[in-house]
Length: 475
Image 1: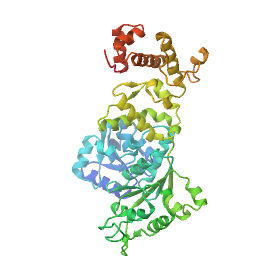
Image 2: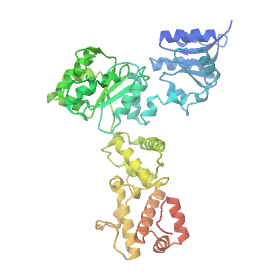
Image 3: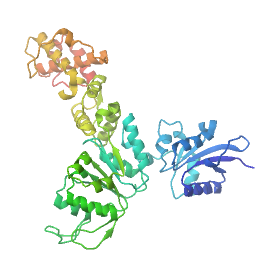
Image 4: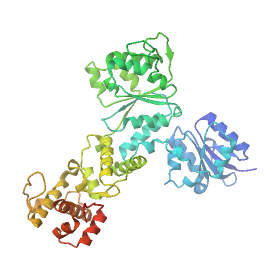
């Protein structure tokens, strides 16, 4: 009697039966993980494991452990919509080289290729929320977990959080991890459209319905049919429109402006706001019944200051986006990153993206140091700019180039060690860059004159300019 050779981990009964039948047709002897009581060398010789829909992670982990030592060499088949795709198919995963993707409805040739070890296609991995919601800190891990939990269902989601935290990215991640991912994702900012036009934008209108309606037009609900409609800044919607939206959510029907024909809609609703809706309800600015319709699954995005450990990963992600637009990447020194950790980030992730883009234009292909950051991002480290200006003033006998008069401070305060310590090498390099920049400013960018001011050989200064990515005006 042949041994069981493929372990099937699948919570969906119909899919499980389909996979088992297909594998049996190909000559394998599959067994569902939930049916395995014990694994014995006389009855089992694992060659592959299939992982599909997972309703209980703990149970799936127990089933996966049935592979034992065979886990180090078996082929791993992953359903394209499996929550384990990012985990097992990631480049850092020990299973990455042995992963094959299976899509439904099953095709025998695809299943055969997967069993032979076809690698994970890139288009599959970009659907995972981990690749959209960048960050491995605790707060972001919780957000990613919630996205994975709610994505398979059609429940309404209310995304809360400050402006710039990435609420639309959450909505897109939920959509792309759901069964609706092949249908449209349509977004509308309810706060950016005048109240008198919002009804037409949402539900569409018939020709002649109002002045300027020169033709029939579909609304966002029709555009998003079968997919997801993202209602951004829902807290800014007027009360009359809230009533109309509530009817659509309750009855799943609507009419175009100027029409009496009722249309049914199949749309998943994801709403977002930076406002306190419970306070708005108490003040009579938001309907309580609509709030409870929208907040079936509330999901709060953390402010950037609450997950600063993700700064490095976020900068890397933004560099990739900028590269796709043809901009150069930007690198931050340890001192610059330390300074950014001390900033409060009122504009959140959006503000960080704008800063990275600005610096990629100013300092392409070079390292950004504390002295290169806009002043408000330097924090306490701006004192080094003052010291550099003072030293250069003493060296040249010329007034400081700082726009504001320098406040005299004691030498102790200038050299005080921060509570968390610092990278001395990087700290001194920041001071050196600041002095070189000011010497070039004083001499009009002439390297030879700047080198004389800094008491060094011209060739030495040229090397330092190359090292720090500085561009002189004249040699």
